[in-house]
Structures are given as C-alpha cells and as structure tokens.
Length: 184
Image (cartoon, rainbow, N blue to C red; front, side):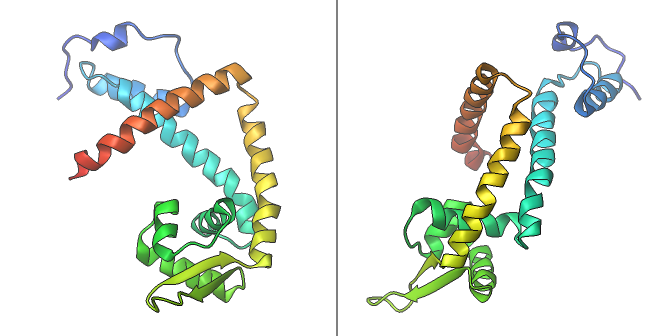
C-alpha cells in the first residue's frame, strides 16, 4: 500500500529538478514513500554513481597494463612512500586485508614488478619494494590517470573543485571516525 500522507519537508524545498540517473531513482522512491526523506539517498547515490563511473574509465590504463585496481594501488603505495614496506604496512596503506595483500604480492612478484626481501632479525617478516620494471610501470600509468582526472574535473571551475574537495574531506573525516562504530 502506498503512503499517501504529506510529503517530507525536504521535498517541498528542493532546488531545480535534476536529470541525472540518481534523480530518477529518487523521484520513484518519493512516489512510493512521499513522507520519507530521500536527501541522504541523493547524496550517497551520487557519490556512488560518480565513483563507479570514474573507476570504470580510470581502470582503462590499468587494463591495458594487465593490472587490477587493487594491484595498482599496491604498486602505487610502494612508489609513493619511497621505501620498502612490510605486507602489514601495505595492508594499511591500501585498506586491504593481509590475505589480499599476500595474494597480490605473489602475483606481482611473479610478474617481476615487486621484490621480497627477508628481515635479517626476524625471518617471519618480509620487506617489499618495487623493481625497476614496477617503478617504470607505475610512473608510466600515473600521468595518464591524472590527465583523465583533469578532463573529468574540467566541468567544474577550480573554485568548485576546491569546494567539492572540502565537502568530501569533511564527509570522509566524519565517516572514518564513525563507520567503525556503526559496524561494531
């Protein structure tokens, strides 16, 4: 049964009608549940849609290089930190599980992109670093990825880019502190 009560107050104060795919979904939900606040759906839906579109296009240079996004993130962490990392440190740098890092390291060492060195004091610990081929691969892909990101963001003025960056940083800061508690 459809709720025929009054509209949620936010619906009465909406800005101009939007034509993106999320707006269509939100309109459909408002028709079914007019008293519910769909504002969060609009924000989260657009963030998720943008992320999906950006990742699909950004992954094209990675696919050409035969890399997954997760493998590139691991290689990128080794490149940007500028020093050897343990698998545990790589897991933290890439927001991955230890098992996922172990699997990726095995694949990347097999391809000659990462080297593993044992710790002289603790044989259970290994240190990982990029090979010359790994460094060259990251350095070759990164400019193409950044050029793509520049084109995507060119639809926004530099001021709007700064504004969006600030808003997203505020959201991220809040989420990083609270989501762990919400999951627990």
